[in-house]
Length: 335
Length: 292
Image 1 (cartoon, chains in turn yellow, orange):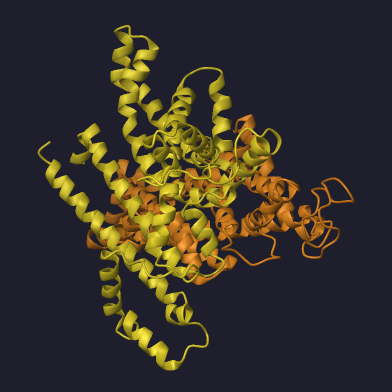
Image 2: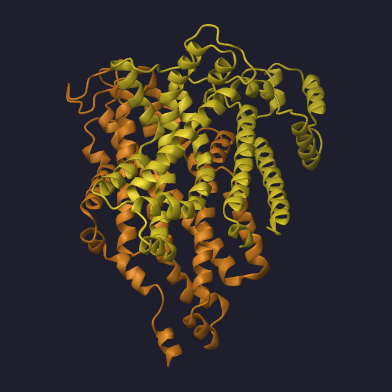
């Protein structure tokens, strides 16, 4: 593990560079978006002098490089600009919408990991259902999140009334707790009925977000399990008379986790896109809904804020996954 | 002698001639993959011949909210009275054209960058691959949403934005293949025979890398169908009444509990297209010996 500090430093440096590049891309998009925030804030009837004054305050009369540094400086102070639609600072809006999205993403990630592991292990085995499972997985990968959501709402809410189909809670006064996530806040306040209500609301949307990533994780896991089962150490384990189950779980699975882990990190990016769509269908009060409402209004500052926050989240999570991989399998750092 | 043999047997010829034999792809496939190939074929035919097949004009309304199979409307009509079946046919067209554009731009842009990086090597390779890695490190679908939103709603902008985030994957694969092939004796022989960098790249390395690229592209199509429909669902595509499957599903969302077919039918069309493409992709990958 002599290389570990070096590896960490390199990974951290790369992470900072990627985040900087992301800010540069978003800044450039803002510039080409043909939306002049000054005009948008002040309205069509603003006087020329007022526009000049506001432009000077926001720094829009300076060279573009200065504007970029101004933008970065603002970001470091938590300034993401002002939404054209809600007229509030984007950072304030995101603080209100982010917890619900984090809650949904975490729940979906949990489901995707469990389901992905089950699918991967089950389809790697040599049993009669493996072929059918493969088709099921391809069907899962082919189904857009919005179809799952539509059918889920129709079947479970429309006809059966099993699960609620909109929002994140049915309770009138949910605890305004420290995290903003209903389920967690209710737990912290000891309101178990509210917590159950939150879980019930969470299940269907989380499942819709999770299916696609679960299939991808399952396919990668199956692939690496297949090659692990052909390796010498598995043959040795078999030869010394271990049961198939023990060989699979204790020997093959451990050596196959690395690829599935990095796939999970990558899938989180797709999950964010899925979250945006699924939140729309379920009226889930998260950043996805915020984005979907911002698009028709051409509220680019809001969309830029969402992209930046989720993008940074994605980059940080993938850096963590890389570090975890090294801890799980030190050979990775030496490559 | 060994060198001469290596030089004669051009790499990739085997792979490419296998692709050319579409019969082989079909006959060699499992039954379920064959069903997928047929499904994709039918959907492509429906899309290509949409103007001939569509019973109604997709943007001329009749009676709103006709239930499926009533009044000559196979899949019913929507809130305006547009025939959903006809709109789905045109929507499939839009989807397929979009997928073709994005995949081919990914192959051309990513492939060219990967080819240059792999063949030239050195600092060119380092610079190009760092840029590629940078794009791979960012969440593609999310970035596509931001780009499309900045450019304003239109289907061309959706394609452009997805195209911008889609190429790096192809660059990685192309470069990997080229580097692996570069170590093979036939390339060494070509260099000894006096072939320059360009000739080696185009004649001796590129053909060998094509099978991997074709398989990647064919496995990519289903994914792309779903991604494009997702962006269209979010309202980033063409404004109404343009027949786009994702946008049709989004606009029908408000009628879900009363007139379920309005949003569900176009969503099913997306899923069927993606399913056909995914199964066909598997069949092509298997036929080329690169299946998973």
